[in-house]
Image (cartoon, rainbow, N blue to C red):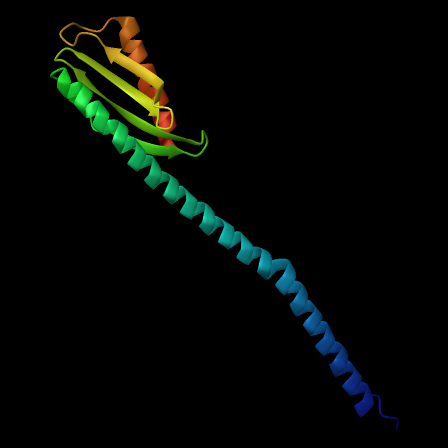
Amino acid sequence: MKEIFTLDKIFKLVIIFAVLLIAISVFYYHVYFIPQKEQIRLEQQKQEQRVKSEQQCRETGEKIYKGDVEKYKETGGYAFDPQYKFNTKLNKCLYSGGGFIGINFWERFVKDVLTNGNIIYTFNPDVTKSLNESQSKAIDEYWGKHKVLFEE
């Protein structure tokens, strides 16, 4: 009876399977493992950049806030608590603040920290009087826009 599997044939099959296994391993490494590792590295870099942007945003915003505190104090008023946010969609550092100017007038704003310009603004010229409909609507619109800017 003739032998179907000779030692020589088995050796060739083992070599073929070994080469195939190595090829599959190399394929997996280059097609799946390296890109996944690179994706994780890029996500970490983005997260680090977001944290750095938030820190710089807060530091710069606090400088503006200190100036606002002095402005309000000079009028006999006071500043509201600030809020800072780096908005990645707008690529802007935002500072939300405001305060009482004197005892009857208050203002609220969101500023671009880089330019110190108002993005949104609202005010109440006399807190001793009731708001009219347009003033009330303007304040509601302000808070709606504020929520969108700071939610992200």
